Image (tube, rainbow, N blue to C red; front, side, top):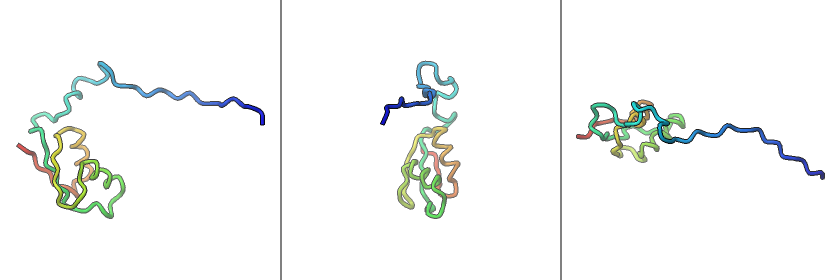
Length: 94
């Protein structure tokens, strides 16, 4: 069997975060005027909902029904909660 060269298509490299890679308004992380923490409780089972919603529940740290976790009040966590408002209840912690 003759040796053939392996042809690979060039792939663009992923951009790595460095100094100045983020815009200043997004680097803070916390929601303006927030208390800093959210108390999130799983009030309805994600069984029967699509896999993305089940994974969002797990990513928030929720495993069991009526389990409560505290998460930082960031845009990322707020976005996750916005995807599953029918499954969780949310309180701001003082």
